[in-house]
Length: 266
Image 1: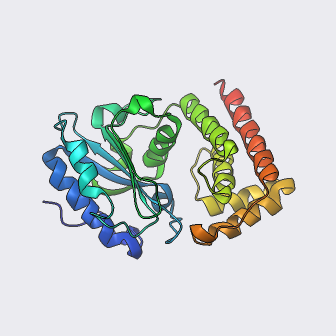
Image 2 (image 1 turned 30 degrees about the vertical axis):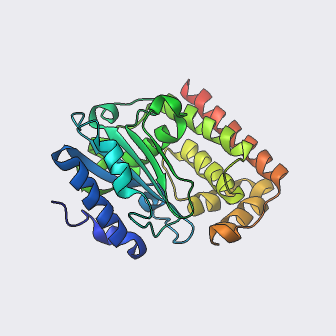
């Protein structure tokens, strides 16, 4: 039975007990087939903001996990059965053989969104999902993942091919440009993070990425700084940002991704 997190001091105090219980319940459902539980997103990048950030988790299981287990896990972790103290839980379960090598598709066994401020979903058919968010999250997991249980993230989850990753980043910017379902500040900050990754090969926290982009893209500095200020606020009081400027910035960011892809021969 799992009782503690692998790295409790690396987890923000506000979600430490919650994540310990999430790991315990995941272990209770998956038993010896549980390989790893890894925090990605803001927890992994050291930029978790309570009242604003989601909890993003990647779970890796043995391919022999019984077919019933993903549905049982979705029920065991659903809010409010397990109350989520963050704005929501975004959890993805993969078979170990699916993520042990680079892959471009979604490829999950379970994609669970749950929480008081997050529209709920539990998907079990990866073919129905666009792949780009999963490719990006696996890249973050490999590079910066915070291992909560089991095999270290870098050993359990392979880095995507650079060509696949740049295509995924480009697709994420297209979705953010449409704007539906995303806060304006998050759209801008994800754009900043995408450009910083293309320039450095490293995933950075959103606020750090915003500082880097504000320093080099003078024409967008007011927008980026406004997005960073908005990110400091709870979701319900996020600041409005001018839609034409947000779209122009995301178009600029997409051009930077295309330049990176061209330089890499992708």
